[in-house]
Amino acid sequence: MTNPGDDDQRPVRVFLVDDHALFRAGVRAELAAAADRVEVVGEAGSVAEAVAGIGHWAPEVVLLDVHMPDGGGAEVLRRVKAGESEAVFLALSVSDAAEDVIAVIRAGARGYVTKTISGRELADAVVRVRGGDAVFSPRLAGFVLDAFAEGPGSTPVGDPELDLLTPRERDVLRLLARGYAYKEIASELYISVKTVETHVSSVLRKTQLSNRYELSRWATDRRLV
Image 1: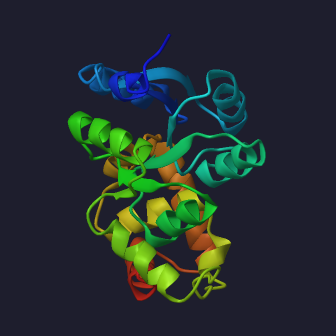
Image 2: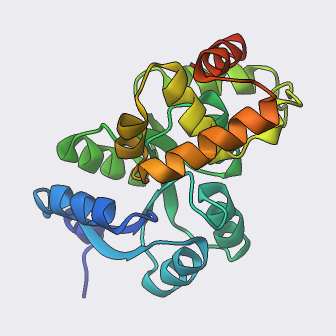
Image 3: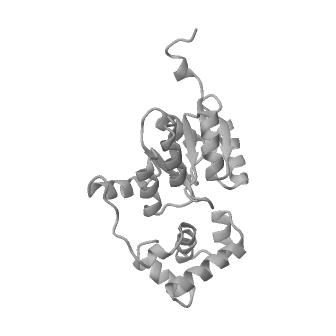
């Protein structure tokens, strides 16, 4: 027979969703130091795996990457919420872009933290969202407040040119505009230098610009930096 307070004493069951296996391994290792508070019960590297895994493991908190090749965090939220899961979702992403934060919160996430967070801070964030708090990395909460201040269901004004870019192309462009070299962008986003070059070429084609300096100015004008 269990006592009413037992749930407060056991670790929070966590499911980890990220398309990079090395990053998932790193998060597991970091959270292992807080095994008395959190327990990673499963993981997934794609939207389909995430939906199936969350249904199987019934976690209390899902750590969710925002950008994945087959749809990303918002798509996981849409599919899982349709299945009536009781899990709470906390976005964990390399991106600190306002549009990414707003999109995943609108989809149903309870918070959003960036991958620069320490293992101890991440464990704290997991426990807090499980307890009902909304958790954000510094300055990200302002994006949400600004977006929802306009009223429930409102959406930011669109930019037709910006809408042509994929979420990953925006990530690459944002870092490029901040002065990152291709190798640094690749390291930051866990992709290859060749993939970075491909994304930059695609952005140049879509924006009809000629070089990274023009791209940087274009990104700055649209407040991507």
